[in-house]
Length: 91
Image (cartoon, rainbow, N blue to C red; front, side, top):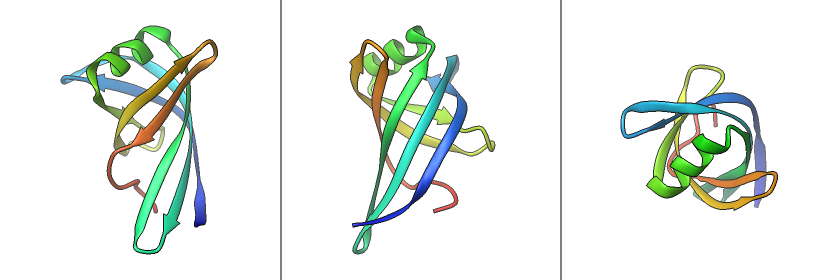
């Protein structure tokens, strides 16, 4: 696998058409042949993380103004693990 880069910043979490809070994110973007994968960590507003976890696929509006679909895969005492569902802008 080839690491393409990282995305790090603060973004807004959108669930079912409404903004539920802000989180800090750090996402790693990887390429494996013709396919890619992006995942990382989220910290910040526990309410926004919990709502996204309970909803399934949510939208993260990145600091640069673009957006990605994401899934919270695990919640821990210091934040959450997330997987990006679909393409990552700039990669």
